[in-house]
Length: 283
Image: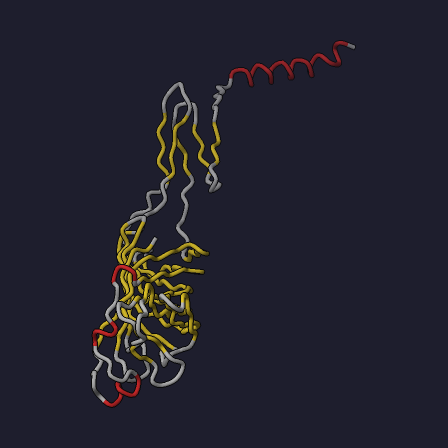
């Protein structure tokens, strides 16, 4: 009986001996996963193996932008002309002097996208948002629902603590973007005999953008607070243009940007030639 199984036993022992003679290497790895689901493998000697991540050709941001700035206008009105007298009789440039520190522009960006055109250096940027402009006047002027649209308020004893024209637009900017920032990617440090220490750095934008924007006037109102009337609000378009076309630009400085806009035409249809512009900080 033993003779029958002896060849099989010998072959098994030879196989074990041959396997035992082979070199074996044991490698311990650790897999680290961050919130962005990027994985990094580190072996026992501290060697880092990182998966290369390609930058997206289209990036989308929802509710990801806020602008805070100042609103003003360039006044080229021909005061005393028939057209101006029909809209604001007796008016002068002093009527429309602004409180610059309180005339503000706020932009809320609902959706913005960036499309790669050339090596992520030249991009197309566009967005959809709300442009809110408040023009705070020094003088006691009032707006009307029909012509003449602006009048001087000479009511005896009345004083103003607030007098503003608000013009709000749904706006769509389209810009060509030049991004000279580098994608920092992931950076890691390894300390032998201790845990792996790592940090992840996102790409920062350094560059500028320029283009145009189209806005539709969805709300406008004259709000006043006086000594005798209290708070009053009159909603109307006051002969403002329903569409606003403007030249826009921004300078990217990493975490924040500087922005500006300059309208192509006066914000009023006729009579008053006031070209609005804005400057501020984009977060």
